[in-house]
Image (cartoon, rainbow, N blue to C red; front, side, top):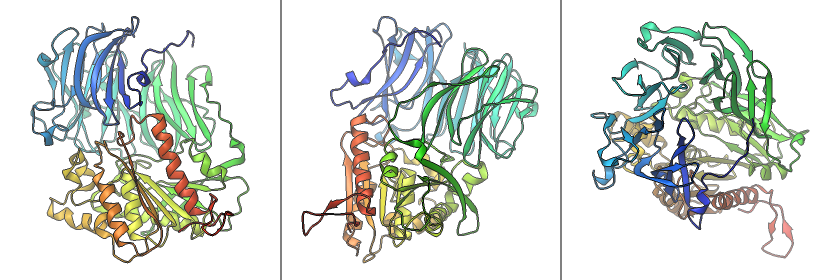
Length: 589
């Protein structure tokens, strides 16, 4: 690597309060132009701008795109294809977060006249994305209605007819192209995924040949580099990076520095790849793997913390139905497993998202004060492939809550946690998780954090973009699904007189994913119903959304409030005594 860095775009200069955010960005192949999206107050609703990188001036091309656009440039930088939602006012307000389509824009022309590329006549809830091949020769169209299946098409990037790659098949497929071959990562016929290849001209499943077979671990991602297929494989919820030939021979494995997580795997120039690597007590680094000459860390943060004093274990426990569940436990070395410790348990369990070892600076506050941190790999996630996800969605969602309850009980049984000093934390779908466990096992927890949550599962689909999640949760509009939603819906299972534990619910008032009404009305109901003396608190972040695009100041304020609450309630934070000026380390209830 050589050259010097300079700032091209700084969102901190756009608004005095820092509430404008870069949601996404796509440089042209030669790096001269940058298409990027800006949203306000964490809304994730973006406007596309085009920046001339050398001059620092903006082109006149400005396009309202809505949420999460994908942009694919023509190789010469004269035009790009992109996705957008209907402009406000062109459809009923309830449909503004739906009917996503793809268009083609030539620089300097009127975006209102951009021709349609894909999406006409498709279901309103369908997610559509455009992805360029590594060599910028081909354009992939990805479309999906849920997290277990998608359709994939390919065509030359300059234009032409779409050729089906995987349509109507039972599983997810994504890919790239090298030369005149598509190289695909697919779950079709392989719940833990495999890599296959086929000619671009005839890319359908009848022409697939196996490059990387399905194995014990789950293949999460692939890139093409130096004529090789490089895959990120996850086994027992931690990462490995492997290089394979197109003929199906594994030739190298990256020497990762610890048990941890790889992310953002990207091909460099020639036979090299870059990726981020991190673990609970290993701050995220950027690594370069030269497939012929070795591995090196090219960027490492400087953090003043005694990381060598801590360790990570992976333990297994049985859930309610006997399923074995893994859990990572982080603590100070030499910890006596005597059941006297405060422990914080985190989980998610949904949308095929894997919870793996990651680094968070604010977690160091908890560890430094002697707390134990645990993260459970619940069903509903992607840790063990498609079957694991299916076992925690729709009518199987209760398995996720059972797994999390069993994780808390295991922490106590294994001596990591005191029975009256166990706290739980989750965000978004994880907020649904902690909300459900709060109502199902209020006796198990000392403190509960419910972040940006879904809590009214009988009406959730009527707000914001939540109809997109019906394939994951189901809908009360379906008579057959009403019963299982009603059985666990946190809001509908609050009972008067129950001594609920201390609870902090937090949300953002401009959250465009999960409506803040969930946290607000759940707080009111708990405050009215609880028969305990633990505080029931609501934190509403102004000019902030689901979390993406939140300025650092707001992130720090939220983290300070959440960890102060947890440390206070579990006895790790000394608070003033009500009867004297002396301090006490006892939990306040």
